[in-house]
Length: 384
Image (cartoon, rainbow, N blue to C red):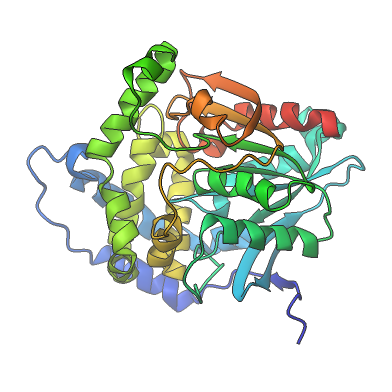
């Protein structure tokens, strides 16, 4: 058996599973709302009811047909099945670019960037800005399942994704990511610094520091001081989901595998909190189709537990400063992000730092695709 074999993949959800999902959504037992029924205690029951009803009526067959127009594949690396999209550009100067998602997202985050990145001429941009795209699903997420072994820290994921690029025939390539992807992308550069052209991330980069002394704070800009304040607030009021997923991912997995509304509520809570502005319904900022299709992907694969496990239940120290790969690195900071350049430079070779303090949330490819696209293209243009 060829263990390096790359196999074409098509999404094939049994119609009985779709009917089961619809029946479960229709028979959901909702609790009485807590006092106020607002986002301070979780997803408001009124909002959750509305999402559940819209999900029940969603056309999964149409979604599956659309997604199956994308070239999808699987391959086994380090004992783990890895699912990925691979879209080649017709442009002769295209650069191989890996896009890496995070939690609670999936490869679906990047769908609307595929056309502009692979065929920029069709979207009003120079054809020389083209990329070949590789968009993997993280181990334990979506169709990169089931998770067959423990201990998948960032370094191991990076090594697996490097091997994926090798199997696809790419000696030199670029990487981009957000959330978990913003940790994996720089790590790929540390694994093979001689092969990575550049690293681009959206969001915080480098050591995660919740505290700083007065002298350090005094050297920060007002924006950075506000980010340190928000980091403190996050640690005090929003860290609960990390504590649960890092210590009891199996508990979340069991609940979400049996209740689609539990799965929906668990991720919608963060889709709402992390999009910008937080007061605007996430469906307006991210698009209702993405929210429901992303929930469907988690539901049909029953991977809430393994996704939480990969994202958080690892023995990697928070706040540890990594070694710099020396690979040119760029980051774009939107309003939701809390990146501090001085911290990021401790473990990365930062050559481009773009600020958009009034726009955008955690899900840049969905919320601000044009700004993200332009920053990626501008950063990698010298190599094309």
